[in-house]
Image (cartoon, rainbow, N blue to C red; front, side, top):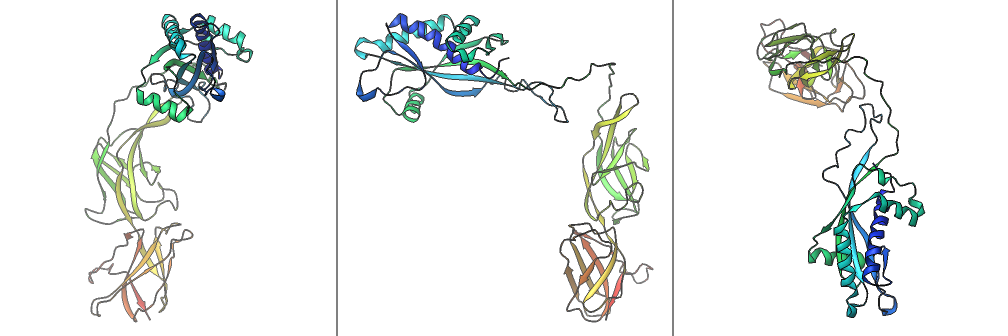
Length: 406
């Protein structure tokens, strides 16, 4: 690996190679690192080579070689490193009548083809010429930097000169230096050596939930206090959890095709259940270590069901307000809607009154009403679209729930 001076070291070493070639081709020719410049006051250009690093790109082969660099807790696992390819433009200047640019190009191409590597000797000479590169460790890199010509089209060359330099064109070629790997200076935290190796082999269990229902029967509403029934395949495992709204709980019973979990407290923490659309999944953790500790294992698909609220009662309503008691509680940010419908025997009428999102958790939402004629009404509540059930059969003891608006 190399430190941050690697790019500058490659440029300095390349300048050294080109300087020897330029001197052999044209006496007094100089290599100048930097962008090509127009001659001052229209004077003839001194012979030489402009060496310009015009582009740096990630190396395709090594760009992801350092992943991952950090652990789950963000501590450093290994020093980060970046692999780069350097793109250089070599512009040749001099007396065109004496063919100096072409002579410089010919000898430079010969030299770079004959020795297409940045060797440790070149790096040492560059460090002598540029003392600020003394701490560069490019010579210790695991791979020599290689030089290769780039085939730039006429359009690409014209863009370089017209956009980057905006000066008259000089004879020029492009070379690529690959690969320069720059390593960070951070010190990774070294883990303790492994005291004992343990190998765990588990068959892949693709648990799948095909149906979610209430133990009360098919097409019955799912309410707090019911037992949730999950049907599918490969559901049973030891250990296992059923996850509802991100809360893992143990099932009351489990087979390969059916898992049951009560929607009660416990196994759910107090106040954790909310009405609305819920996601449920089956998780099969993996026990590892001594003593065994649960680790992330396999998880089924996430199935959806609607947990419907229940109206437990209503305080004495007035012509302007109805106070309800509901289960589960309306959570902070949930939207509740009161629905009123006339009982049979009265002229059909329906009303809906919406509360803003609840500012806090409450089991007794209050609804302001208006324009409701006196009489008896079926009462329902919607919480985030989940609607409480109502019994319309007069012969059923659970007929209702109802409220009487004075």
